[in-house]
Length: 150
Image 1 (cartoon, rainbow, N blue to C red):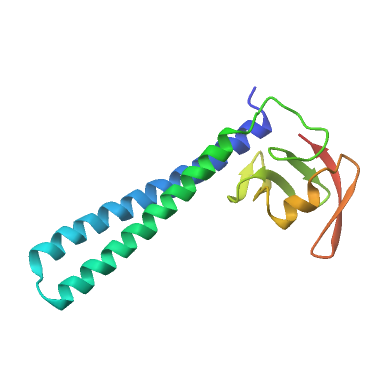
Image 2 (spheres, one colour):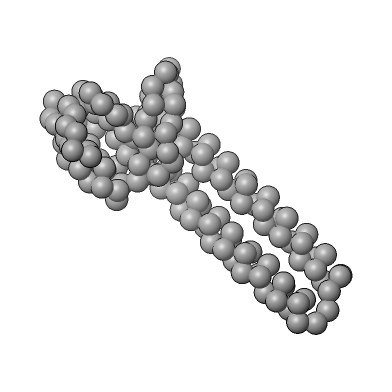
C-alpha cells in the first residue's frame, strides 16, 4: 500500500522534474536563438543580443541548479518513518490547512485533500516544528489544532 507521505513525496518530485524539464526546454530554445544570432548578425547589436542571450542562459542554468538542490532535499525524506513531533519530512493534518514539510512546491492534491508543501525554513514550518498531535498553532492570526503527524 502506498502511504500518504509516499504520494506527497512523488507529487513534490513530479513538481521539481516538471520545472527542470521546462528550464531545459528554455535552455535549448536559447541555444537555438544563439545559433541564429551568430548566423544573422554583425556589429554592436549582435554583441548586445549575444550578451543578453548569455545572461538568460546563466539565469536558467542557476534555476536548474536550484531545482536540483530541491530534488536532493526530497531524497532525504524517509517515507517509512512516522514522526511524533513535527520536523522535516512530516505530514501534518490539522483542523485547517494540511502541510508537507519538505520543499516549497505549492499545493499538492492527493486522496481528495490539499497539502501545502512548504520548505523547512519557512515561517509556517518554523511555527509547526516540534509540535505534536493535539497541540495548536497559529497562522495568519488563525489558530488550528494538529490532528495527525505522519
